[in-house]
Length: 249
Image (cartoon, rainbow, N blue to C red; front, side, top):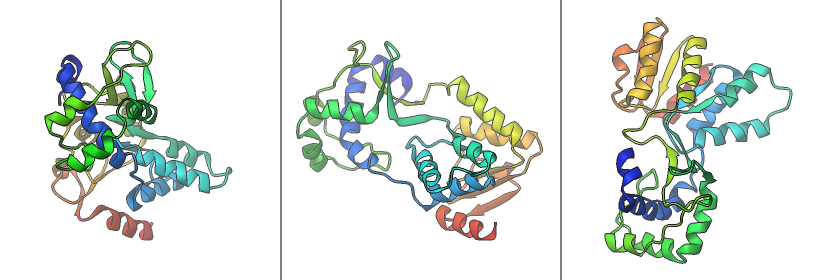
């Protein structure tokens, strides 16, 4: 769905939230995998100066937070700074914003309000859902969408609530672009992990590093748009590759 459709078509928003409400049971239960934990450890050790993710699941932050809780308070300053530098380029699903008044609400708090408005709906609709995608989106028949009751913004009451993620046709916020530019300037190399780099907001990072004559490595399960700019390419499964690299660092 494009940003323009979501903002100006109430029926499209209604359909999105009906499907997302059901799929959140899958998405909200997701936990960091070995690859997330590996990258968090690299940040803590100073191997990574920062991490830019195109994912919107918040799992990199969760992995960093879990690792931080297990480590002592006297870790080096550079490690603390690196672990805090996770730039969610396309936003995060765990936060919802109102397009009318700018109000912000935690996704889990919204889910509780939706449950109150739709008792038993999620469980029944999940049985009827045709499929559940990895991002939590589900395919529902229009009859189920019509039965769903959408709640409004807690601040202004408008039905223009939107997950705080960048949609097609929407620009990446300037503060995130600035954070990426700072990392590009301060980093000596770029490691692309598990991304086709098909979207320009991500591919532009590789272009900037390439223009700065800084080395680029790509670890991905398939072709990546950054392959032509890369000095090193490794087409393989992500988690085993990162674990192997960790043993050699």
